[in-house]
Length: 142
Image (cartoon, rainbow, N blue to C red; front, side):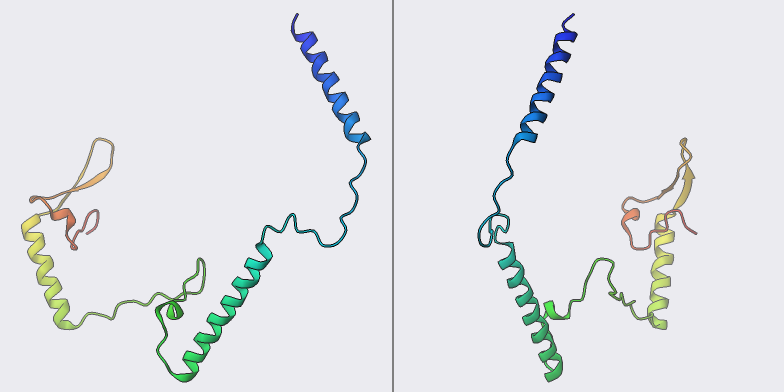
């Protein structure tokens, strides 16, 4: 029983709101420039553009004069940008031999084994503690 008066009240409120919006007079056009929506962003954008131009000029001048770049000038990072990741140089034969010897020593000490647990996940177990923290970790691999 209370639902019917509540629905009628909502309908009456909606009709009165709609009629009040239709009867409102349009606001007069502002005279002169309006700064109420700027919030200082135009000045900040102009300052940022000027700073970027100055940074670009300083970098170009350093390159032209053969001076070393500052760290901020030599960094060229951008999300989804064209940055290049350079690989480490290949190991020398001496380094490869030392790496193989260290890996063999780790294998002998830690004796990694891959086991499948009851959930079907492959896990690597080691004979010694701390072997999972080694740079020679071969978890799940051959």
